[in-house]
Image 1 (cartoon, rainbow, N blue to C red):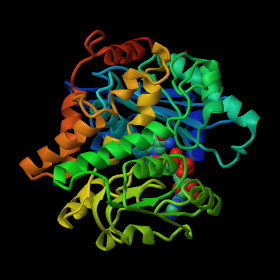
Image 2 (cartoon, rainbow, N blue to C red):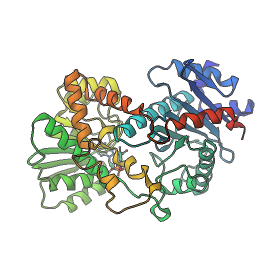
Image 3 (cartoon, helix red, strand yellow):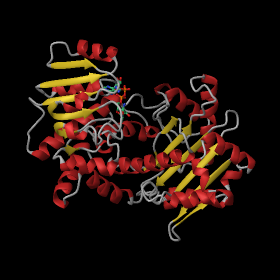
Image 4 (tube, helix red, strand yellow):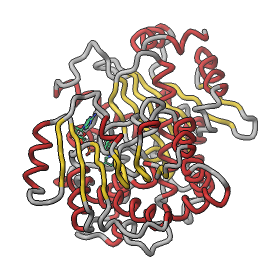
Length: 436
Ligand code: NAD
């Protein structure tokens, strides 16, 4: 049975069919410290998840279904709901094994708990994953419509313990399909009352993180500084705009897209910008002598290969999961004397922008803007200063310090609803949701 985690998602779907299982769950019993499966045939998986000390962190509930029309595995990973419903996007991504799918979901869900708690949002943390089935054309609109509508039905069946959003591999059209079947989603299109593209506020959030790190180091403001930016896409370009508005001395930027580099050069003509197109595996921008390095492209670029060559004083960017290995690379940067501002601390505006969209929409929304001002105690600026100061005081890495602060905040109960997500999960188990 231990081989179940080694199965490909396709073979696992065949196994589930044989067992006549379409929906299933693993729910954590905190007092007994047990992870309990809805089906005895799947209990060995629960035991293995429980034994995975790196990725499993008392996640409250893990819920799954196999879709009917185009069989795929779909999951909702609920980490912690003290602060409110578990919130985080749904990823549409291929996985080689059931084990790698589960590990990714566990890790990403906990990351959302931390991001939401540090942002002071009254949301818990969770993540959705729809596993791409190589037998389907995932660009086919009919396939997508079917998969995302079935995901919406899944969300409704979960009664709101998890609220989904857009993530890697999904777009607003997909979310609109989910929205046809459930109210438990954010990031719907503006035409349906949603919040729209968060890239510009995300960029300003990164600037606030940079300003806080410079302040912490006693290095003054951004004026006159040299900034290296990897990736000049939706976040990278407005970031550069804000940097020039702050009076930086020079921006050095790379992108693998010639089109984006050219549009960037055109947009900032006459400004002190050096932008160049690079090959996909060319990370030479990380070796730039600069004050601040801003990764705004892909994840896992801070690793044992790249870290020794980094010459920045501070790393602060929008890219998700910049550290290839959270603990190892956070420590390596610390040992190199580089201040790494954790991505989940400064790129929160993506989730902030959509998190409260059901409460209505205001242009220049004060509820969102408070995250970007410097006074609010939960603003990006203040939380960055707090996390870096705590790290210094306790001799922690910034990543460990951010996690410590986030873990404490994530245990605070919602001021009105209490720990309602857990009550919803208990009701799902009692009512055998998976049979519906
Ligand atoms: P994007 O796709 O618009 O831009 C990313 C850019 O990086 C693209 O232009 C791409 O060509 C470039 N790129 C890819 N590999 C590269 C490489 N090796 N070297 C240089 N450039 C490379 O994405 P985005 O919306 O700007 O987001 C950037 C990052 O920030 C992503 O990791 C995203 O997950 C994260 N993020 C974005 C938001 C948001 O609001 N858009 C919010 C939170 C986190």
